[in-house]
Image (cartoon, rainbow, N blue to C red):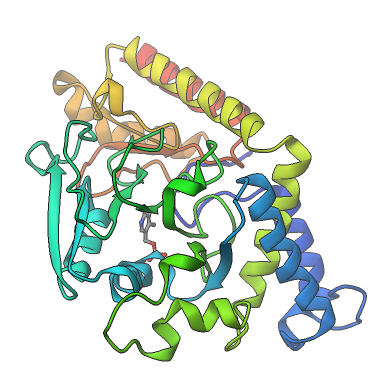
Length: 355
Ligand SMILES: *Cc1c(COP(=O)(O)O)cnc(C)c1O
């Protein structure tokens, strides 16, 4: 049976990425050796990381003066690296979910944190847009897509200070005006590559302004200076990221990806809104096009387990919602074909017809 992959992360990758990665594990760049067993300083691998960084710059139209980095530690490591390197006195944060909460917790270790708005009181079912960012903050941090709650801020906010964004789960799904940011980071395992690498885009001039001592590995300047080769980078995820980036370029770039993503999400939200059995959990104006969260309407609540089983029997994988929201979550990342969304909608309709 055909499987449809709705996992939230690690999550679906293009067949192009998976096939080329599998091939390189057996024979990398015609060296007659596996990607797993050659030096990261070989000219073959150096070419991989250079092309991957160049493609990130091309796809996101990164202006001059920024460096693309490939780091370990996950997006969660960035929660502390960002304030370690950028917070002098005070930073502004938008609290829109678990990941934002975690980022705020780390930032408080380094200075004052002004939480400009929060949707915590309503279990993070929307993204606040009415807030004031203090002009004396060192930066404004927000999470562009709240993977767990299915909410998203789909445009760059206006800010009197440079921004920092956690774009782990929606990077490459919309154009970004990188010039408004001091730093953008994204764990790879949602829209780019297998887990193990984090993409960072940092403005060179934003670094070097804090007084504190920064451990070498946590200092962005170390990695900028050494082109992400200060220590051994996660070679396999970086190789996979390159495949995904080539694939994105081949498909026509960010604008094309965005149109496809919007189409997939619109179809699924329409199906949810027109059903009597399913209800979306995010407020309509905050809905994510990457993670669609829904529950059973109160009168059908007891059918939740049965629907989960039914969907699984039809090949729908990974649609169980996160424990803090419950119900279901279908992640519609870039690599997910429209056909999978249609299969899920069909499965929901069949189930509704049975009851
Ligand atoms: C998955 C995710 C994280 C956590 O990423 P790790 O790589 O596991 O640290 C952080 N932020 C967002 C928005 C995520 O989706």
